[in-house]
Length: 175
Image 1 (cartoon, rainbow, N blue to C red):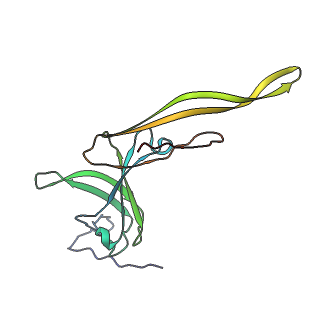
Image 2: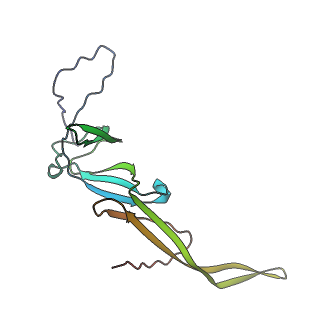
Image 3: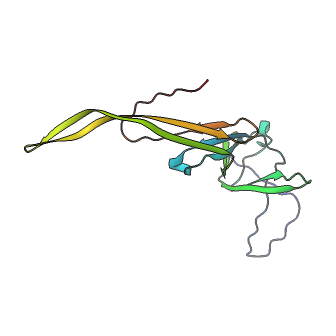
C-alpha cells in the first residue's frame, strides 16, 4: 500500500473544532496535452476541451501522489498576473496516473454532422392472420462530419458516435 506524509509549508492557526482548507500542492507550470472530445451522448452537442497530463516528474509533478482536493487552472493574463480558468475536483491521484481535466466547451472549435443519402432496402415481411406487414429492413445512410477549428494552432480531435441497431461502419478520411 502507498503511504505518504504531506508537509504543508508555513504556519496556520486552526481554532478548536474548526475546519480549514490548506493548499497542498502548487505547480507553477505543468506540461499537458490538449484534446477536444465530441461525445454528444456524454458531454452534450458541442466539443469539450480537456487538459491531459500525468502525475510524473516529466510533467512537473510526480514527487508524491496528489491527495483528494480541487484542481484549479490559471493562465497568464498578459499583465504580470494570473486569471482563473477552470476548476475540477480530484480524487486521490497516484504517481504516474493520468489526469483528465475537463475545461468545458470551446466556442472556437465546432463540429457538425449531416445525414444524407438515406436508403431503405431488404424489406422483410411477416403475416398476422390474413394480413402481411413489414417487420424490418436495412437502412443505409451517409453521415458527413466536419470539424471547424478557429484557433491559431492545429488541434487533436476525438469523435465517439453511437448508432442504434446493428451497424457496419466505414470511414473515408480526406487527405
